[in-house]
Image 1 (cartoon, helix red, strand yellow):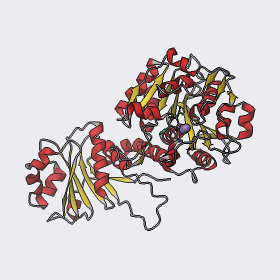
Image 2: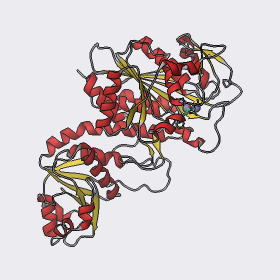
Image 3: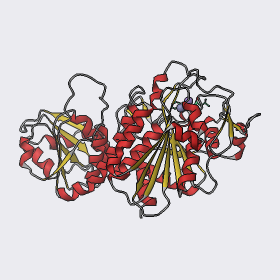
Image 4: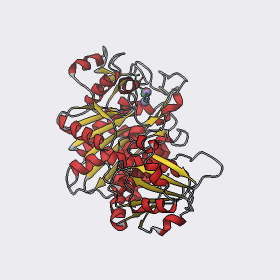
Length: 488
Ligand code: BES
Ligand code: MN
Ligand code: ZN
């Protein structure tokens, strides 16, 4: 997997500023005051920074913005990177500053004069997250990443605070790698194997194969995968750091490729459906982070891994399938497959683990993109408490999440003439009827959220903390929710 850059934390050594050969970064607050590191750069460069802070260019910079001053006289460095950031930045500004540093670093070594700036650990996280690249399938020489060194007033304490950040970055990278990976590589088998490899981190990982799933009666999940030559699987990952407390459960949609099945999708853009396992990818990333930082909580992650293909053995529109719960479903559209997978996995998770709360993630509907675009995931819930706590955690982490309505009136749209329900609700409110469908497989007394991440899991353009492609949205929010609400 792609591993986050290792960041060094060192004692302040002002002499190193003159001799560093890569790029040297300094932080200057909006007041234009220079700290010791910046003063050193200023002296060596015969007052380049004094002139810069008095310029319009500096005035116009927003918090966290970066300007590169190339080939400065008096330094061995290629460039001085000036980042506008106060002594006590907000977490978001600190991460943005780190991301700007990652972009400007561009393969050089980087010496960061952090001094005693607050949230240097968050700067490091922003840097690590934005430095991600998915180049597994690029041949030719790979550009080395370049070393990153923070010179800080108390490097040991800073390194200690930055350690959980490394666990977060690694979880996010795991999610992004899985979500970016094409479906000929990330087959159902390969996906399960990558999850099984996390046993090294102390997670329990169990793979349920088709034979077992048949015995369990997971017919709606199996109905989605039966057109593919790749066998369907359910993978259970457990982290037991919280004694004998009931676990917090995460459930993910892991459709490694969604052709639509017999209700086949149009060719244009179909390649994007390699990311249709993004929900399972987030569950995997959270489990990785939780294990790496040895969370004092019980967390179980359950993912349904299938491929939705058209073939002679594929499920047809009109077929009626009986779910593990027992309710029957008339398949109107085989492209509404995510809810079929989740129906059985949600039910199984509740029956087996009796979780104290359950959150599922899925790239479930195109309608979610129509409603909220790429800025927010949709939050559907039966609990004001759980959804409120999640939305708060997402806000703290800068991951957009917006509560959507649910209600029995929407449920009417799922009525079937011949079965207990249809798998689609018609043209309007598509994201909500999908959520109503899922809720039929959630017990009333289990606090539950469904996160429709169709718009946020992967982007065509870069975002604040990620290059174009998979974002890893949700790993940080869920990790924080676990830390705030479920750790003892
Ligand atoms: N995986 C898709 C949803 C999707 C669309 C995710 C775009 C990411 C980007 C899902 O399985 C799907 O095909 N949903 C259908 C449901 C419809 C048939 C009721 C959709 O949204 O069109
Ligand atoms: Mn589909
Ligand atoms: Zn899908």
